[in-house]
Length: 261
Image (cartoon, rainbow, N blue to C red):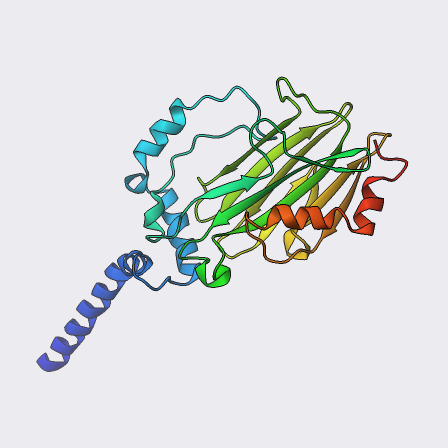
């Protein structure tokens, strides 16, 4: 009887030990050379957002002190405390960026007498996406091209954009374009699970069916969209892809229809 009690006691101790270290194991695995599953990282990220001891206080203070009077998109930048990025795993964040917007809105293309503004968001190569990117240094997850009839070359009030890492390992980009009589707002995000979506003036786009969105504002105030499938592209490849795209007959017809602005 005493031997049975002793064996049961040992099993109980081992079970308690396993339960108490399970959470720590996930955090340790996240910092090892092999990235753990998306489900484990997702659970860890959600947990640490609620844990004040995990928050990046320096980044939080910097965000509080940041002021930007110029609009960058439909959403106001919200200052939330966020976990230190390396808690999700060392090397899981290497940076973000956009191509097609430089703060002055001087990037544009033309089709005949039509002016096309454009922008794209990308995530740089990190431990979470390096197998998919292979030799590329980053990956475009969203591109937008908008027909316009005006450019403010003085104050650049016709355009704004930003991409935000504070939801790591998910990322959000936003922006807007103003025409003479309309405004095109857009938001795009990509997730840890490599799922990407965009919203343009309340129209939802599943970017797995094409990460490039064309928008042609109409003279009556409405909008016409076209979603285009594109290959995996980096920020070094997107400009050449855009030039080639704008020479396609279907795209030229789309942007030069009589009812367009």
